[in-house]
Image 1 (cartoon, helix red, strand yellow):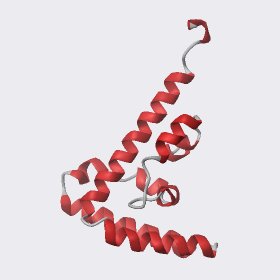
Image 2 (cartoon, rainbow, N blue to C red; image 1 turned 90 degrees about the horizontal axis):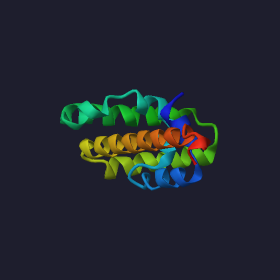
Image 3 (cartoon, rainbow, N blue to C red; image 1 turned 180 degrees about the horizontal axis):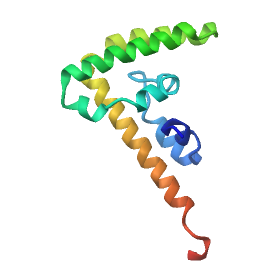
Length: 126
């Protein structure tokens, strides 16, 4: 199961923490639409390699354009266009975006781990 699907199944209090990770610099819409692609990239390596960060940023824009062009809902397509424009302005340099995504993925992984540890606590312990 993808990390994003696991995140969506977290308890409400943990979901509220996830909500704080997203803002105008990287809206949750992008995370949702590109979940599989985002999770398959090597963000850790890109943090230390600005040229790799730049390639990932360009690829992210390409992926976002692909998703936007396939979107049937006019409003969603419009919103994605605005997000693309904002990314081009605010996510430069590309390293900022890489750091942001790496932090989000790390925080989400932590939230999933916390949720699993809570789930596996035996009721007899209380």
